[in-house]
Image 1: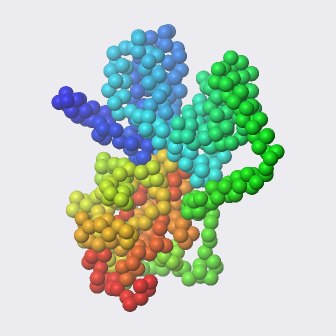
Image 2: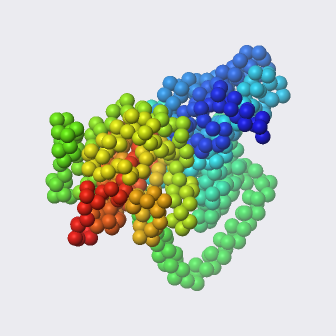
Image 3: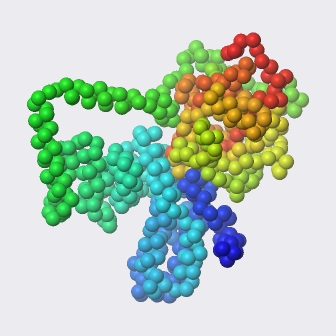
Length: 535
């Protein structure tokens, strides 16, 4: 155990700037950029080995040249490169699967330099969870932004800097991951895409027989028996002795015969099935509103309400620091009132905050509403860190700025939280404040409920990544150097349920934000109660 700790310390000192423990790479683009340099280092070692035994390793040399070109591009702009979700997924796949296959191929005659480097670096590689997480992110982006499978496979996404595409083998891998999750809808989409690319003549190690085997079963599970039979027949044309396909074909024919008999006797069941399908489509109305708002669709404010929104110079209610130099403020929404402050944090301050936060980034958690314990969740894909005002004058200055412009006391606020979103990074609809059934949510802090939220946008996002409010139909888009502010509680202390909001998945780009949650205590004279509950 002691040796392991020393070894980790040495590895940290000379190789990577983060912990030996696995760190959920796919949940933060910021941490994934380190993997680009790791992969680049491996390519260099591999090329040294090729020079020594070039005549024996022609196949490996082609591999290395391909990756050398890829990593050379990636290291020039790691965040931009990984901002393309296809690039991020393929990085997970390469380091978790393909480098391992390469290691097995060359292990027998490998030189000491490459094998030692590979052994050291491998302990920092992404694992199956990362590869699966990146794959699920692609599927999530596909659904949220209504992306055609072929469009996503070809890498034709808005605002991309480094265009990339998925091979038939990559599509097959995505289909398999969906299959293991019993997600037959996406299994069908990606197996069909893999088959299409092979039919178009793409040279690949992916086998049509395997693809058709998965595809036919996924189609059957979704109730399309005729299509499942047609796919199974195609499989049997390629491999007439395929045992499972032959068995499935007999079973499908048996089911088809039974359905024909049932259809003769009654049509009532068809009507019931149609009603069931309609109900299934409507089972998550909030989900549909959320995804529409993420795409820039959905409810729009009426012209009459829009006329009530203004932009202005704001001095923090005659705060001495801002009388001579007021800040730019504009209204984003009226109910709940959401305001945006422009040019409110400088590029230099942003870089300082990011540098302070990056070594501390850990997988973001949520509070279990039943147990109160902090835990990770599939609906919050990001990493976060907390910064205190006493550790940096920049953070202290930011805290003071928030206090001056909101008029609220920040001494009872939580520390500045910095978040970096990963591949398809998101945070599904949630409340910032504790509801009536969560009376002990902030009991340990002793500062009451979260009265307000201040959110800095510390990067532009090429596509996606909006902050949306499904209850009212508001979409607030990231703009670097700006911040948005809203109250979570009415002056009475009751929660404003219209502030339910979400962070949309990042389609292309890299999203950095930081936020300050301000609490009730200390605001008694700064925001006094009113006689009306909803005033």
